[in-house]
Structure formats: structure tokens, C-alpha cells
Image (tube, rainbow, N blue to C red; front, side):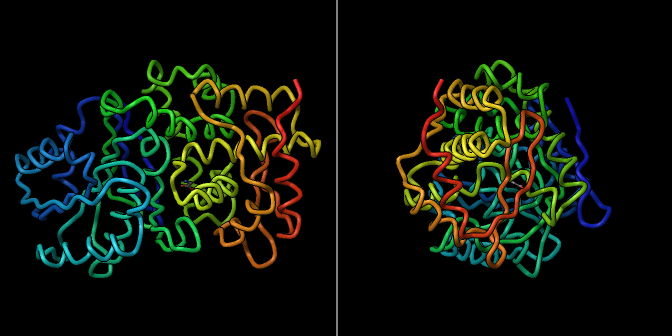
Length: 357
Ligand code: GLY
């Protein structure tokens, strides 16, 4: 078991408990944080079938009154209409300011339930119980919450740290290889940022075998970055490695290409571009592309540079006429590069052709 502290909200932080079996004792873990509260468990239809009963029963055994709301699984649900339905549900269920939300699920559930917690009655407490690798290694930690708008991904949201994250790696046992692989993109991303120890754990694609260590190292890295830059004024932007092109691919595909696959393609594009700009050795690029492939992820996209650059223009990483890219210089060394928006298409173009061996 590991308990990792994340500092947030100007001093008061929260614990991320990484422990097999913790989902079944979430009531006990959350009881001291939400005393006397009613808890609304927000989840999706897929996760509800597997875990909702266990979570509600643990919460009820710990003395909580509970209610639950499950929306249709998938990125297509991460919109203002689902958010509105959740808020109406919270009001109809009579949740008050001293009550709380549990976000039970993957990245979509965590983002939307965290957003609902941040704006219902101007803010009530919530906890994250992630159930996918992507949520364990990235989205459940750090307090970013959002929904997508027509113009792009995550364009409405709040920084809203949870009161706790209960991460049970046993949940990975029920994940399909496809969903696991999707989450591996964020683990490889963190390995590229953090360095050799984590990268070598993900490099061969043996994610299930190394899952607990990978989850722990990813959370430790993210906790360190978020502790230094909770509101993404600088350093935290590094966590967006591969995401400018990745978000553009998600949007262009109508969210049919999942987040992890899109980010993997985005990492592939930006890494090849970094090599061609003389910023990254070919050997590091080859390891990165091969790690993504070993995890079953795509590293090339059929979209063209002009449509990718066009779709990136609404991205949050743009500020006026500049956009910040995360450029890999080597495994364990990435840097932020502010470029004029007008240069984006040319840089993406450099990353589209596969590397010659
Ligand atoms: N997913 C990137 C971040 O939390 O900053």
C-alpha cells in the first residue's frame, strides 16, 4: 500500500491511497473526511454494472446515506448536457452543502463529476475512485475537471482538487486490453517526462505485470508537479506532452478515437518533429515510438498538418497568437516551447512522416 500526499488549495492537501482492495473499503477511508454526509455516487453505465453495488455497500456500512447517477459511458457524454443532468439529479436528491460526491470511473466520470462538485451549490466536497489505468496515472489526481465544448476538448472546467483519491489497482483486472492500452499512453507520457526508472517499466509494454509500481511512480511524479504548479502557470504544462495534436485528433474524429490513442499519436508526431528540429536524438525517439507500439498504441495519424493545426487553434494551450508545445529533448528531459500559432502547421508537418530506420 502507498499513500501519496498531493498538496493543493494553498496548503490543505489530499491523500491518494493506492491499495489493492481499497475500493471495497472506501466507506471506511472516506468516513473521516465527509462526516454525516449523504453521498451521491456519479458513474457511467459500464462501471456501474461492475462496481457500483460494492461502493455503495461500503459507503452505507460506514454510515453514509447514498444515491447514485449513471450516465452513458464514453467521451460523447462529457458535455454540458450530462453536467446539467447531474446537477439536476443532485438537487432532486436533496444534496446540501455538507454532502459530497464520489466520482466512480475513468477519466470522463472523474472530470465531469469533479466539475459538478465544484459548481453545485458553489462547491461541495468530492472524492475520486478511479477504475481505469488512465484515471489512476493521470486524470484522478491533480484536480483538473472539465467538459468538452463543440469547439474542443475540456474547454469548460475548474481546478477543483478532490478530498481524497482511493485507487484500487485490482480494478485493472476487469479492464479489457484495449482500455488498459489506452491508459498506457499517459503512463508512457509520464515515463518520458520523469525518466529512466519509470520509462523502463513501461517500455516493453508489460503494463499488467508492473501495474502497481507504474501507478505509484506516475502518481508520485504528478503529485510533485501539481505540488509546484497546481494551476498550470508553467511547469504543469509539461503534463500536456502529446496533447496539442492528441486533442486535435480526438476532436477531428468526433471523439471516436479514444484519448490515449490520440495522445500516443500526438507524442509520436511531436517526438519526430523534435528530432527533425535537432532537439531530440533519434535513439530516444526510437525508444519512445517503440514503447508506445509495445503498449499496443498507434504513433501515426492519417490527419494532415493543416487540419491538425486548425483543430488545435481552440486548444487551451493557446494564448493569443502563441501556443505552448511540450518538446521531448530526451527520455527524462522535456521542455516547454512557446511558438507563434502560425508555426504550428510546419512543426506538425515535420512530425507526420515516419522516421527512417
Ligand atoms: N492531465 C494533465 C494534467 O492534469 O495537468
